[in-house]
Image (cartoon, rainbow, N blue to C red):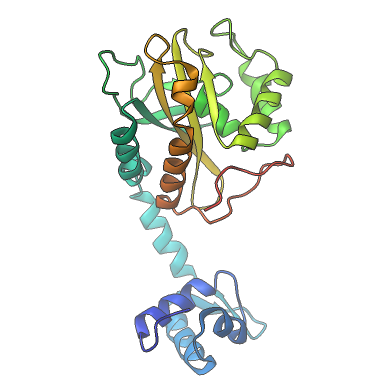
Length: 264
C-alpha cells in the first residue's frame, strides 16, 4: 500500500505491481490505488515504454524496463553492494571474512577482509575455490538439486585436499542436508589443514544462489565450536547481502525437498 496523496509512490507501486498482476482491478487491489488512478498511471507507463497492453485487456512490463535493467546490471558490482554487511560482520567478529561468487563449477573470491589476528589467511581476491570442500562452496551446493551436485562432482572430481575432505558424492550430499537444515555450512579443515570456516549462501535478484560469505580462523587460534558459534551472525550477514543484491523474500528452492536458508 502507498501513502495517501503521493503520486510518485502510486506510480512506483503500479510499476512494481505489473510484474505480478495484469488486470487493472488486481493492480488496484495490490497497491491500494483507485482503479481510475491505476488506469491513468498505466497509460503514462505505456507511453514511456515501461508497460504495454497484453492483448487480453490487461498490462505487462514493457521493453523499456528490460533496457533499463540491462544498463543497471552492466554497472552492478556485487562486491560493492555487499561491502556494508561484510564490513559490519568483520567488525563484530574479527575473523577473516570472505565473499565469493559461483563461476561454473567453482567459486571466486571477490572480497576479503583480513581478520584482526597475528596471522593472515592464504586466500586472495580473484582466487578460485573448490565447491565440495569449502564452506562457501558447500553453502552454494546446498541450494542445488542432488542431480546437479552429482554432475558437478563428476566434472570436477572430488580431490581429497586433506584427510577430512568429503570425497564421495554420498558423503557430500549427506553433509548438504545438514547445511540446509541448520542454514550454514562448515569447513572443518576440509580444504586446508588447520583452517576452520563457517559459510552461508547469498542469493541474487532472481532468487538463485549467487555465492556465499564465510568467516575463517586458524585451528590453533580457535576451535570449530568457537567459530561455529558465530554462524547466526554469518547467516544474518548473508541475508543482508542478498537483500542488497535484490533477492526476493523467498529465493528459488533447490530441487531437493529441503528449503534454502534465506527467508527474507
